[in-house]
Image 1 (tube, rainbow, N blue to C red):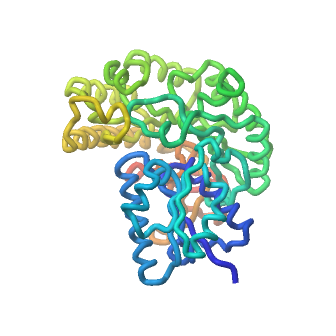
Image 2 (cartoon, helix red, strand yellow):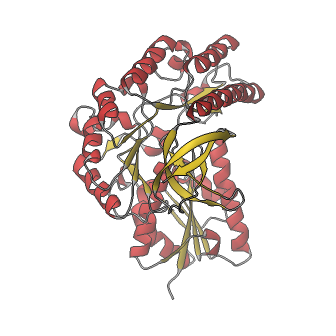
Image 3 (cartoon, rainbow, N blue to C red):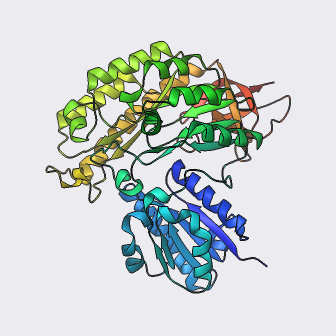
Length: 443
């Protein structure tokens, strides 16, 4: 009977794609993959190391599995992903329950690491980050009808608060033909919604083609017959070209949904963050996007309490949020990450103040979301069905305005027939609850 391996993948969708590639290579090597890491011989934690809360989540997961190992229920624990890459030897010293710490450059050799751990060996391996494979088979971990498509690895933006370039290395684009081939295979496997990701999707192609190629890539993806929805995440404002706007406006399969992390609007704060622009520029960009792309849904994120952020600068951010009325928004208190330029800046702000400012923006956004959902009442929207809520006694899914795991749900009843999971149906919105639309399926 083959040994079993289970994986917990934490953090972003990019990390999830890495996890799927590792699971594929483990299956090819003859290991049996189980859904629950706690039920496996070898438990792999594909960690996140982006901000403090994510690091703590990774550590808590390791400690939970360590207890199972102590009880003899699992044989070994392997740490992969960003936290393992970032802290390397320190991981094994401080979390002695771990049997292997694997840098991202060693992902393709994960089967060999598992074999060594089963032989009771301790493993620490940290090859060059550039050895992280960009291509390869994947064992899809999402529901069959949607999948993430990673088009590039790493980042060159050098935002002063961010450790990603240090962890993941320089920006590396995949070739268009390889991406299209993978997308076609995913479509053949039943994927209806393709979610295009990278640390910065708008920079795609610049390193290998000498110019931005996201617009061309999206056009080619839209030609894949079996794909129905194509969603794009993580677009940086300064790289959104007129050509890209035109593609969003006129390609029917491309969802009118842009995730554009702005982080702030004050010019001085943005400059300290290592980012470009100011409130006037960003306001003009949003106005242009909404004029050119009908029914656009904009998602963004903001950081509160960045070093030196004054009350006046935060007030400007608050006013900006109220003025723009983003359809989707996330807000996070600044996390002081060691070895980043921002961590060494003077005028670090107390946690209490950072968190209070984030709460203010979140409460503002709640009211904006309520108004947005109220505008949907009486309208028909397309929803991809995700399941049935037996407590609420209704079906649920996501609209075109909702990315998996970060946005909300649509709840709906149906009188004519029961829809199947992954089906795209029309729902007439009658009401909303806690920013989630409620309605009835129109057959």
